[in-house]
Image (cartoon, rainbow over all chains, first blue to last red):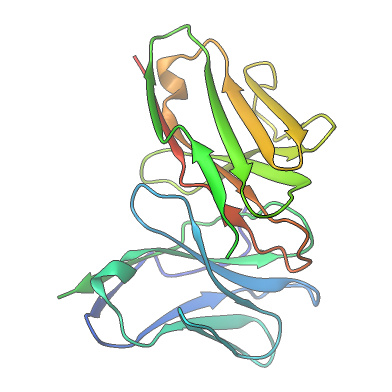
Length: 109
Length: 116
């Protein structure tokens, strides 16, 4: 079973920032925090990951709480193409990812 | 990022036939690949871990004789659904991580299987 908890759904207006929360209260010290997203009828797509420090890439930013028990994926300007299910996953080594239900993000034009 | 190619993207077959799905890592070597299945409005469920040169490891409840996995090279894993039945209709997705220690996974686009 997935170890992370996320809201089932969120809604955002186009061009607005979106903050997607995730709780991972039982995360171990060596687990990375990964975020993936899945667009309709496609395989998941890697978004970003981190261990302790906040991370930025061309797709998003990841803010990790100091105690690592929660994190927030930040989309700086949501577009219609960002509508997807976003998954927050604890990951370590070369092990399979365990997907929870994720957060379904709707973007309103 | 790395690219994983999955083929075919969709397939329709008659009940009782077998279907083979290919998963290729195009620009990296993958000693391990993973196969997932996703039913409508549900999350991805791991079916098996495919190891190059050895037998696959199946999750509980997944029939190894029905879902044959072959990982013959560092860039190719195949999943064969044998004697498919309508209840096998699903979205099958593969992934691979290469050698990165941080376990970033790259996913295929998925194969939608419809068994009539």
